[in-house]
Image 1 (tube, rainbow, N blue to C red):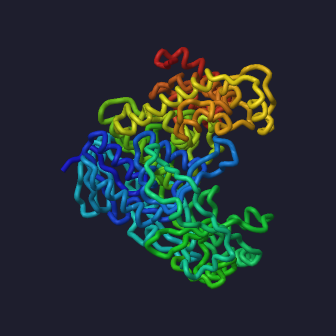
Image 2 (image 1 turned 30 degrees about the vertical axis):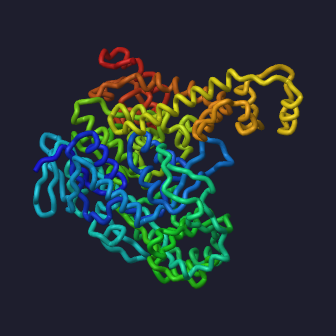
Image 3 (image 1 turned 45 degrees about the vertical axis):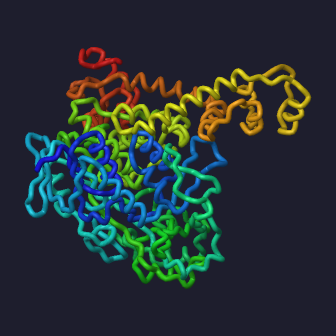
Length: 622
């Protein structure tokens, strides 16, 4: 049997990829080692967080599934950084590890054009550098026009605790032992990466009187712009905050050589921005304590996830470590922490469409590309699925720019800079983060979602209605004036705001930091949804900053529009620095803008390249 698209791996990347291709009308096969592990959350029981939460909103705006599934499946939800500016605000939800995969599997099983199969992929079928299917461990061959690899941590996965190491996936499943060798034979550079997870604690063995409760927000929040809530505010599960102690630090320091990482047993490179607890103690030796969170994993079992306590220490040392924590003196460990190593490809070998440079019609997404996190994986999976479908339709790929989406920043960083450690999305990686906010992901990306056919009529009509109301409220605020009457100036004085001597529009009044929408709402004729008010208020309060970032982004887009031909020969460009020439040949950027972001390529090299492109009739200046 032949399919148009085969997706290998049923994690968060694989789910988004197969839903995208099947919803775009292409006959798709999702093949996974164990159907029960589809959309599994093997590490933290949460979706979202700084930057990551915005990615989930972007997935929703494009017509993906993660946001909707999170809304159906969470134990608690809250908005982070509300005391800070909108550029760093984001949503985070504690998901139920039983319900989340169950709901996602139901969605997949109901999807037209999608077949799910259990099996282990041993290799790819490639002819003339073009993928044409997969080969299973029983030698069965399944043909397809495109393949998307979303293998997670299963490529030669190994579990480590102390000096003990064994082959396996996160739950002890069989890893894929031969696929990465096949990729290496095809010409891919394979690198070894490492991540880890903390212990799980029996809920009833914890003394919560020594922990600080961390409840969900007391207002209804949804990840999806559909704004459909599935929970009661009063029925949310609490998380709890505790801290490491001097005893914890002493135990770790005294046993460093027993950890897999510091004992020299780890081959792969771990994530810099999500380090193990022993790494935190070594790297931040001046810190007296580190915060940890006790997070419920499900309503259906009593495992508590010890967030921030990832370790590869032996089991006996983990007992001492856990029992040194406040409230966990008598805790029972249900599952010991571990590190996991796995193979990944060098992301410099993939295009911005997530199609590989080495094998045509082969796409990759998620941890195989060197990222960490469910959200980063899902975002890549969606883009890989979209672009695989567009490639089969002979259409141009969807390339999200750095000023359009965190997903665009993520992919551009991977394919332009590469990574030698698991990449984690951070707000600081985005130079235009005031444009890439939690509140406006739909305004940025919904038209893309509609144009490629993933955003439903219902969701698109809701989006257009929101746009209409934003425009209407903005006009009303600009055209409604208040005059210097006594009651007006008394109100302004009560808000510690300067009184007025001439009439002023509500729009200009809202530019004052101390004035909120609730202060002037009685002067507005129509009632507007909170999401509309939030959008308008941010655009008014941060108008100057937003325009400044838009101006910078527009300048950078001028360089993005200077295209570099696919077969451009950098070796023939005279006067380029040798390092720049090597980097340019390896990455082969598609535009001057991308070339400017390559480490080792300096402004002088860019000037030389620009001159050469002007003489090359194939170089395009859009």
